[in-house]
Length: 285
Image (cartoon, rainbow, N blue to C red; front, side, top):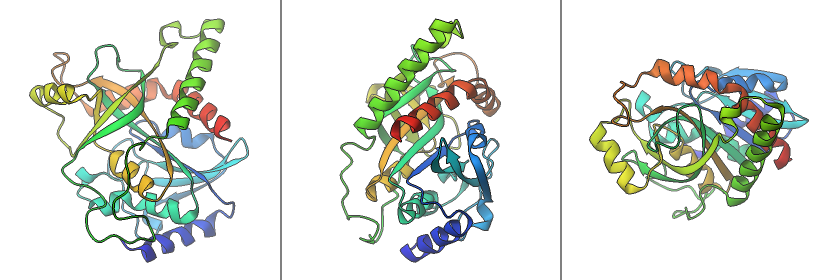
């Protein structure tokens, strides 16, 4: 996808929503309900946006939602495109290209992930502190257009330390409120911090592969997020990442892994997930 493609898509989106947008959110499997929180929402199916691909996975509505949260304009991807759907990396990364052209400064990437840590059970959230790219490809491979960013972008702080602090502080406030009101005592310590390992999919991992990723230092595995994080950092955007832990990875239990389980867990933690995102965006504002 060219710079001109990104400009065409950005111009189309601006024609539907005139307020300048500096913050974008990408919602993973089962987490799309957050987009319903926006005021004055404009919903655009991906197939209407020039050069956008279609999302074909259950739990991904496949549309861009533009609106305001507490007066702050947001662009929210209600679902994403995946490498395993057969799309090229440049297509998977295209929304980040478009957000950069639109003037977005900060992007919050969310996903559903499997836990490699017995202390991080399904139903909890993981703040992504770093990632390991095991997808077998880098989205910046090929000719570099310097209008997007440099040939060799630094990835030392892919996930912005200041944003991580904001997320941890907000999670602490939520835990305090829930403890004081007697709400869901069992999830007052719901936020963990860890390394996300991205794999190409669509198969879930084997127990032997999970054993290897644990040795490498991964805390959770999934099939998204890393191409978007790389693309956003290439363009100078600040990135935050949050995983919804929907299952234990292969070999951690004797239970088979099912996509239905991913969706059910996402729905179960929807309220605390939305509460966290709302609070983080308020603090960013």
